[in-house]
Image (cartoon, rainbow, N blue to C red):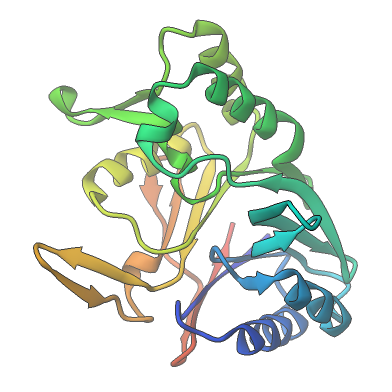
Length: 255
């Protein structure tokens, strides 16, 4: 099975995003293409994008930043797939982004587990994929006093913990589209190791974006290794090929 990860330059304009995404999909021979967060900007981009897709053999996972469902409802970070050159709405969007949002909310945690079970799974070549969006990886926490060991965010809810672990353990590939690179990579590495344990695959793919260092901000290069991570059975794996332009980074993996 061939998987391609595609990171866009974070300040790439909307028109260029949809044109480049369509071009990369139509020229792909991969079984699965996974784009970074905010691959497309708006619902109008989505409509135009659908007319541009010609590839009937590649499955694609991508996110739209803003989708207006009605005059009063504007959803953010909505997930879609492409299969047989048709776009399918997964009818799900990012539920939280920070540990503070999920830490003290058991109801949100329960809703999230239900969302994962019912709307965040799809299959490619017989392999079950599960999608966690960007900061939703904070469903896990690290115990700093115990070498950053990873545990479920709400261990007092054994029922939710069991449902979450059962879902993860029944998954072959965990996909984590990200908007901009995360900090504290020591803790993130432990989470990647956890998600890829027991012979699972974990892939994350981010735009380049900016990062704060003390009082200053700096831009992360589009060719940075920190934009994409690929793990199997607790260990980082090497790409089969890599392509970098001024607008995107694409890495290909054979699994």
